[in-house]
Length: 203
Ligand code: HEC
Ligand code: HEC
Image 1: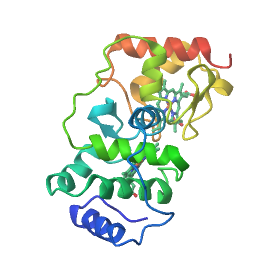
Image 2 (image 1 turned 120 degrees about the vertical axis):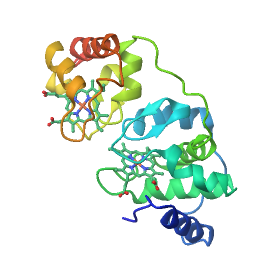
Image 3 (image 1 turned 90 degrees about the vertical axis):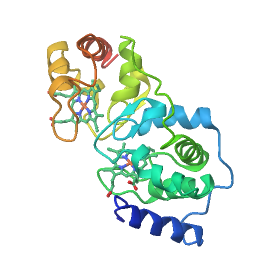
Image 4 (image 1 turned 135 degrees about the vertical axis):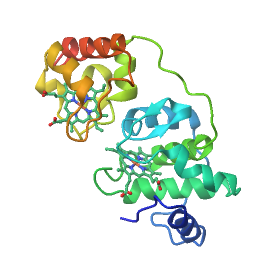
């Protein structure tokens, strides 16, 4: 797919979409921001940095960095939204295409367009609620019924039923495309999410 890592390429993509060459139709509204934030946390946060959502994923580019430039150059929010929408539809591995569709895709892209690159205050993850930590950091890649998570990048945890020590170790060091969370989450948070996964998987 198009690499949008360079500002030039991103601006070219913006121009292309502004010119009406995007696929699948343009967003007709900014969408529902609250639903957009919820879906971003569940489907995208594991791979992308987005300060306003408290997202710290590093598999994909930081969306704050990607859109700070276009924002500073006063591209319209609807134009940026259509770049994000296009990416959702045309993504290539490791980012799965069509993680969200229809109105949900409009809501997520509208939310990203509104908050990316704004230095909005992160909804800091300070607590040790294992389920909340899972939703923010793990749900985009793993299926786990207890958290309503349906990610398919990593193994289905309901089927795997990992023990506490295995989960704790995996979260600390990562593996494959799974990032290491040591340093990103506190030890208490790592223990809390490992306890949540090992006690709820398969139930
Ligand atoms: C499994 C990891 C993963 C998930 C989940 C994921 N992405 Fe991505 N995303 C990536 C990667 C990797 C790239 C870079 C792709 C490339 O350059 O080929 C990317 C690129 C992007 C870009 C382009 C950024 C730029 O620099 O131009 C946007 C926008 C984006 N993703 C939005 C989203 C949204 C919105 C979601 C949720 C619906 C999402 N991503 C879910 C990994 C992911
Ligand atoms: C970007 C996607 C991604 C994210 C985010 C992610 N994982 Fe993973 N996870 C994977 C992949 C891929 C594997 C298989 C990796 C391997 O083979 O080492 C995996 C493996 C695992 C395993 C299995 C370990 C084993 O030895 O069998 C557990 C447990 C796990 N992840 C828990 C989590 C938890 C808890 C979080 C959040 C703190 C998380 N993962 C975040 C992708 C992800």
